[in-house]
Amino acid sequence: MDQLIIFALLLSLGYFFGRSAEKRHYASIQQREQDFINMPTTAGKYVLGENTTVTKSHLVTGSVVISVDYFKRILASLRSFFGGNVRSYETLVDRARREAVLRMKESCPDADQIINIRLETSSIYKGQGKQIGSVEVLAYGTAVYLAP
Image 1 (tube, rainbow, N blue to C red):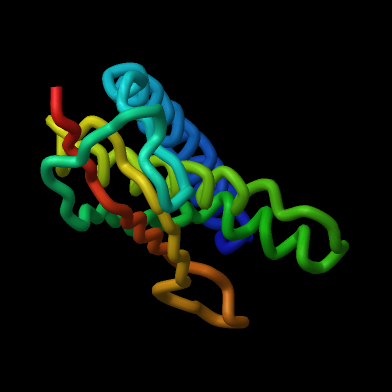
Image 2 (cartoon, rainbow, N blue to C red):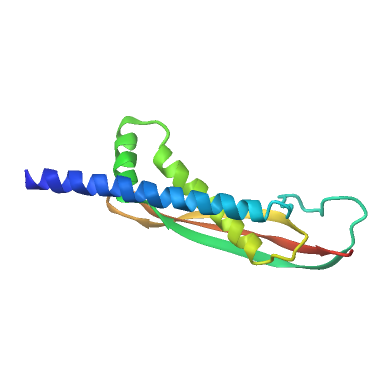
């Protein structure tokens, strides 16, 4: 009986603290995305716009490692048993991807554009049963500075 109580306690703590941390992170992401809304980014190889003269360019990167909470790990285990989309991990990957792109933009705040953006994703830790523990996302691209 004690083990069931401990499991329920950990599950509820994971749910409330994980949900709170995720909400704060999404709020931070949304605010920072608004700060960089005027910096165009593209996966294309060419500078956006007509008659643009590039004065400087360099490689920029942004990376993040985000861990999944206990509650989401339990939900993912249940979902893998029954099959279907693992929504608890979808939000994890979404936050990691958006955070990596923001960190890349923050590394070159004076750039006019970032072109040729690429994203790399990998799993950092696999626990028992090869469950995902953390996900790493690396965003990289070319920061371009244009002539006035």
